[in-house]
Image 1 (cartoon, rainbow, N blue to C red):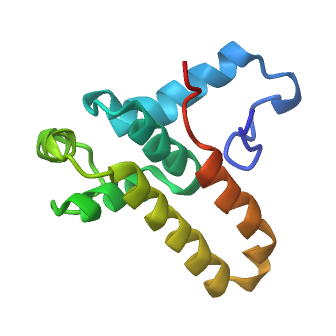
Image 2: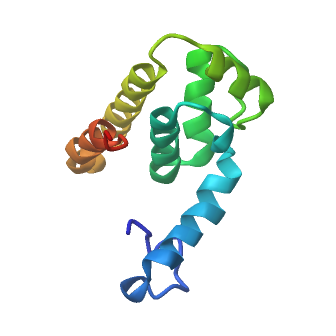
Image 3: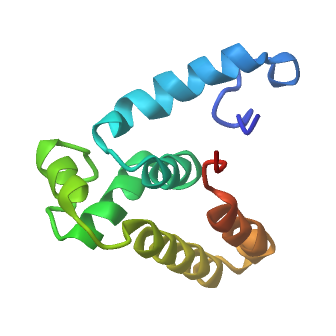
Length: 131
């Protein structure tokens, strides 16, 4: 379920239930990220996934830089308002920035290059199912 023993050493990861995993993601990522203020659900999913994979503040700072507000890594009222009134394709812009981040990370730390393809696939696969 994507929960790492490194960050949760006290948990029995092998026997973690879906409900327990959901509670952890809600408590440790969803609530601090304050993403319920964003109206575009696919953009929310991209930001949330980046927060889980690369850190909450980094994930929010990326969208803040894209929309041109103060990049403090906190999803506040101003950031949300600017995001929600934009008409351009923020999802594609955010995905591009995620890809740049992962490529730069692999260049800085060559031992992580083995994960690059998976990270890039993660960006592309991160979307809500069409109904």
